Amino acid sequence: MGTNIPKPALERLPRYLRALRRERGRGKSFMSSNALGQASGVEEFQVRKDLSHVQVSGRPGRGYRIESLIVTLEHVLGLDEVRDAVVVGAGRLGQALSQYPGFENFGFNIVRLFDNDPEKVGQQVGDFKITHVQQMPEWINRHGISVAMMTVPADCAQEVADQLIKDGVTGLWNFAPVLLRVPEHVVVRHEDLAIGLAQLSHHMAWGRSDAD
Image 1 (cartoon, rainbow, N blue to C red):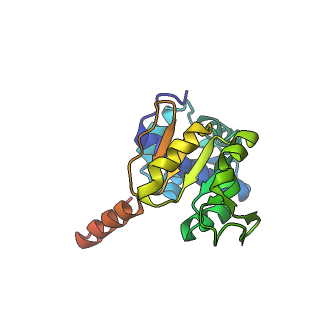
Image 2: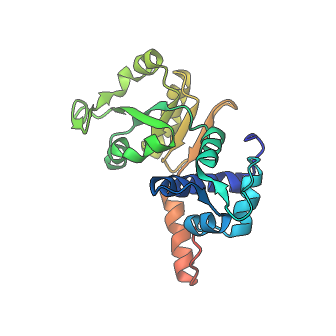
Image 3: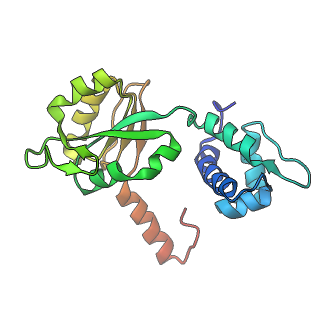
């Protein structure tokens, strides 16, 4: 369970988890596939198909047991273990990411913010003081960090990624507009904001409402 899930289905599972957590907070115990689909913006048949990949099924007339499905999805998504992560690049985006509280709901705890700009190093950003990247290798090794969010310029992104991998990081969330070359054991999520905006522009220009 969880290793052979198609990518489109995997990308929808966090939507279901968010909706289920919301309903649990309202005191609900069960949720139908129809209600889950409406809350997640997904067709009912697709919900049932996606959840079949994690080997869960609903009760006739009642739907899915919310608590049980939350536990299953958290396990499949690797969220039953919180991972400490660092942000590299203390520009506006990096600072905003370092302060976003929602990451903890999805298994990540931001613990450090790095930059190489002498004018930024030492500045306080929320609970963090910006640390110089020269201290990054020792700090990452000492604290066993395996995940890094990269909000650095494109022209230095590969160099930063190489250093992070050398230091032991195996998961990269890359916001730089460049495709990184990494070893097979390293997982990269590329988040190109410009591509997202271009797709939004396309859907607006052609009158589409299903941009996601």
